[in-house]
Amino acid sequence: MRYETFKPAPDLADIVEHFWAVENRIALDRHREILIPNGRPTVLVCLGEAGIRILPDGSSFRNESNIAGPLTRPIVLEQSGVSSYAAAQLQPWGLAALLRERLLDAVLPLDNLGKSKRISQLATECADAPFGSARVAPIADWLVGLRRDVHQERLERIRSAVALVDAARGQIDVADLTGSMAIGYDALYRLFKAMTGLSPKQYIGIIRHYHFTGELLKGEFGSLALLANMQGYYDQAHASKEFKRFTGIGQAEFKRRLNGIARLMHKGR
Image (tube, rainbow, N blue to C red; front, side, top):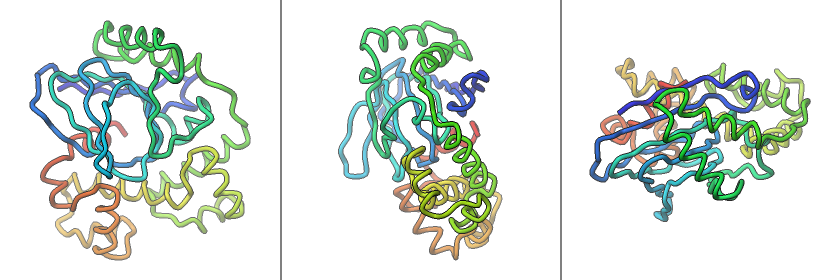
């Protein structure tokens, strides 16, 4: 399997965190992985056999070319056959420059954003390009044409807020965030909801769990209690409860299996 990430050009860096491409030319038997929340929307272009997205309630649909909003719950991705995808991982506020909706825990087929012929052409252009930065270039061009103006003051404020949470690896509370930004809670809440679809508390919790998962997969902490404390949880029980909420399974089971996508996500950050 090949997986690479690519930095966006300066004209897209304000809405795209990075592009990525993944390809597995070996036909797989049915294989499942867990997609954990990371606070970022994604524009996905399917270049091979579409997998299946399985929601927490057990419902499912084909993981074809789509734009997905930020998650607050885990999703199981099931893939079989030959797989190939190209994508843009957006900034947490990236959808504000593309759509009216923030698509929280929701997915919109790319056909809904333009003529189906153009979306089919986009997939063909990506698939025909060699694996590497050329493969994601058509997505970048398409996003440039799709983007719309964003209120600059809101953009600067949400960028600052997200930077504070990300730098603290989620180990910050809402009161500290409002104090650092000299902004009231209600204004901060409206800012996050308008620009990301998430509340400040939701975003903080997602980022803290994301980094906890990364450290867990590194395996450098012999004690889960110590790791929980280092990542800002009250205790190991609190960390375990949050882990189950965002991942759907326990820490030991996740570390043994179903963590391939999580490892790629951390590799790309």
